[in-house]
Each structure stands twice: as structure tokens, then as C-alpha cells.
Length: 235
Image (cartoon, rainbow, N blue to C red; front, side, top):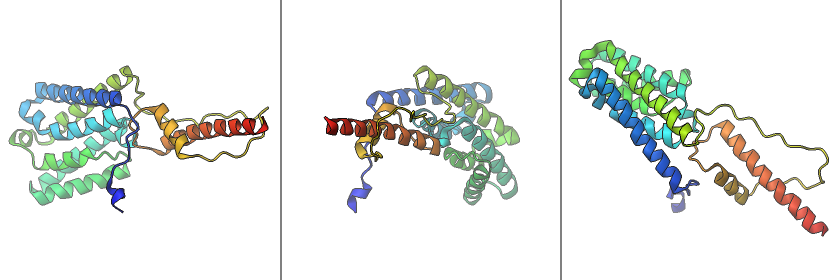
């Protein structure tokens, strides 16, 4: 029972950790800096928490559904509109901030743009600093500028560092069935999964398509192993 509390091993190398860490730092710095140039440092610093949290997803687990472009753009817009509406109707209290986060979650799920940092963004906008409050509905401007800048930075940095982003639909690999040996139906083992993860060498917040790709890759390793066992048995 106690073993369940220990985290599973990470299937990525330190080089990938460094790549993600540098990207997160640069992405957050650039988005907050640009927001400060347009709307002032007080407003920009008030958004640094949600933007930093989003940067973790966009640079470290860019393969996940929660880190795709529509997730960050749609969720930031939902959280902003809901938070400003709740603040205008119910005031800026802790209760209204929590209510805004819950309502933003429902809207994000409905629009299929779930992005966890946007829950914090909704609370941040309700319990805003005086500079952000003075903007009124125009507070959507710095929010979307920060989100857009962070997204553009993630697209550029991830692809320049050979990490495909955003992730598109993954097509299952085609397996040639003609002129092949009669081998037993292979079963995926832990070794096959470990080899498949080693080939991908990325942080993974697994989506159905990515999981399908992982399984097909593991099946390829299992098939090669099975063919090798059949040939060894015949020899």
C-alpha cells in the first residue's frame, strides 16, 4: 500500500528536463515582459502565476491534450469572461473567486478547452490588484496578450528544439501482412513498453491518440521479439 505513494520513474532524460526548463523560463519571461510594456508592470505581474503554470504544460508536457493551442487560448478567454462577470455581479470576495473558478471549469469542459492554470486565472482576476480592476472589461486584453505570446513562444521554441508542437492526430502505423512468417500473436510486455517510451523521449500527458501510438510501437517491438523467438526455435 505504501508503494502506491511513490512516483513512477520518469521516462525522459535530463537533457529533456533542461530543454523544458529553459523554454518555460524564456516563455514566461517574454510573455510577462511584453504584457508589461503594453499594460504596465503591475498588471503583468498579477498574471505571472497562471502564465508560469501554463508554461509548465506548454514546454514540459506539450504532447498532452491540456497543452494544445485551443486549450490555452479558449480557457484563458473563458476564465476572463466568467471572472469579470462574477466580479461585477457578486463583488470581489473569496467566495465569488471560487465560484468563478468552478463556473470557468464547466465552461471549459463544455468548449473542450480544459487547461488547469485557467482556474487560478479566474480567481486571480476576481481578486485582482487595483491596476487590473481599473481596466474593467479591458482586463481581457492583457490576459489574451500573455496567453498568445506564451503560445507563440512555445510553438517556436518546441519546434526549434525538435519537439513537434502542436500535436496533430496520430495515424496508426501500417503493418505489412503479406509474405510474412507465421508467428504467434505477440503480447506486450513491460520491456516492450519501456523501449517504446525510450524511443519517444518526451514528457507525456497521454491522450488517446498518443496512447494508441505508444501501444502500436510496443506491439512492433513485441512482434520483432516473437519473430526472433520463432526463428531461434526453428534453428
